Length: 149
Image (cartoon, rainbow, N blue to C red; front, side, top):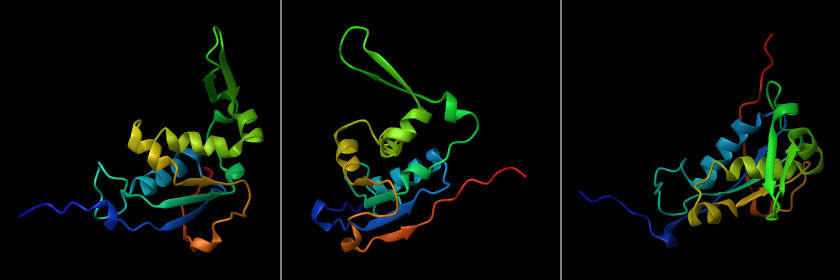
């Protein structure tokens, strides 16, 4: 018996909307990365881009657990000598909440050409509104964070 290998023309792509309100950043990113990669499909093939498009709304309402709000740090380098810059999550979330979600998802995708191609299917927006209503996206629920009682 031969293993079925889907061809690039046979891949069907869907659109999904995820509301990030009250969802922990890591949980949101792992669910979105799974859909972008296509791992939720029975025809998943590791060397092909099988994934669907994902629209994340309310990026500014994503939550972090513990003390990560003050202690999580994002680094980037300016490519000049001594150009390592550090930004605390609190500042990054106020200025660029979309970038916080994008970075979390990008780092959960493969670090190669396929990962870069897959990442382009992610659309992140601040607030409820997005310009992809014409694609009739399906709504997906991600488990929200519960406070210990």
